[in-house]
Image 1 (cartoon, rainbow, N blue to C red):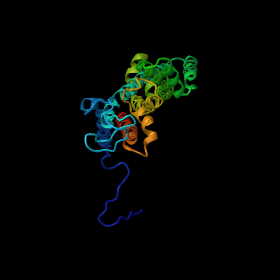
Image 2 (image 1 turned 180 degrees about the horizontal axis):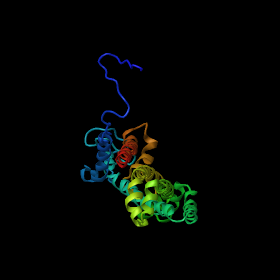
Image 3 (image 1 turned 90 degrees about the horizontal axis):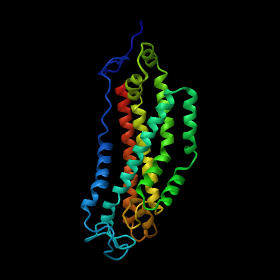
Image 4 (image 1 turned 180 degrees about the vertical axis):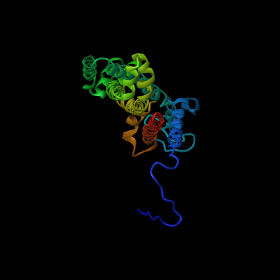
Length: 286
């Protein structure tokens, strides 16, 4: 018989005993994401000046009536920052929703049909995947100047192929499990298997993939603004603000740093939030 010695005041822990640690809710990352999204969506209502009006000398230092100074054309940076996130965020979210719908539909369909048809469907998807995402955005945004719908379609086409592959692999894993085979053996229809087995069990990967697509969509949309594509050039846009004010960063840093910092914070918060949520969904499914 072997005796296990433990330090005084400390109880010996045995495997499988004690309450399981519950994952903490993603409070901080969720709060950070919510605050930046609210700033982007509701910011235009709080803008103190017109975001397109020239009000002072270019690159005026922060202070007085201009909290963050003025930009390259003498426009109020605070007003442009508050007004420049709505279109960018809504475009990225719309592109993500469209890409997610295509990815879930095509990925699950490719997993549930025969192997030959599934591989054929993936070959068609791969035809889009070989095109650089930025090239797709450039072609559609330049072909339809000023069209937000074209930018949404470009973002969706650039990101949907990767969602399709990820969700096809996740659905394949579920379909090859013993519970699905047992369900099919007892006579459950494929629709019932899809509803009760496949979709609930790919919720975690789908959530994580969606978050990654949000980050990718934000990057593509911001890049389009950085290159002067998308909506009207006079309209405020965080990506365009970085491009416009970068040459004068040594004269006034806030017109360049404020939109860049918001883009970075939004991308990081969304990525961290998605990781925590996917972990919660995975543990709940287990």
